[in-house]
Length: 159
Image (cartoon, rainbow, N blue to C red; front, side, top):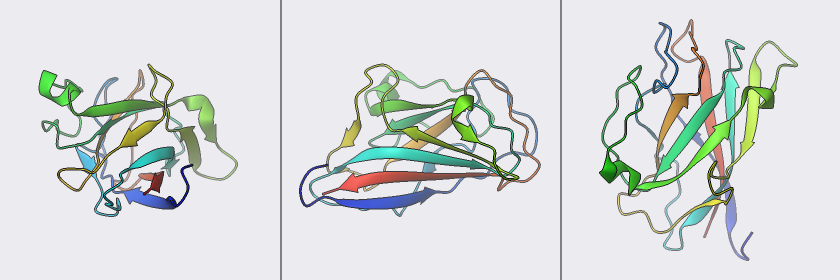
């Protein structure tokens, strides 16, 4: 943590399809949140929490973008363009092993570290005022009963 930074927990709304997803499909389409606090100094993602009301405990990849990537529809294969990769800040793995299934739902926490570099995911002043995300089924085929079966929260440090 950097001195004078503040910690925020941000909800990123997700509406899932009620039909099965295929492996490598985008779950919920392009995700963003107006709750991401915007400060001149930027910030850093600390962790992600995924609550699965259906208790499927599926593994996911969460891609983070600093500005609007091209639109990939809910249920479509994750296929970013070259321009999208240039906006990508990193990718967070949410493995099935991270789920705690003590209750009737599953809850996974994952450190916000890029899967390739193992470094934190930081952002500077965001030109669009938002962070953007794609939640991608990682070699799994989730099938949710209700459109609100998945809840995504992100913990971040902001300047």
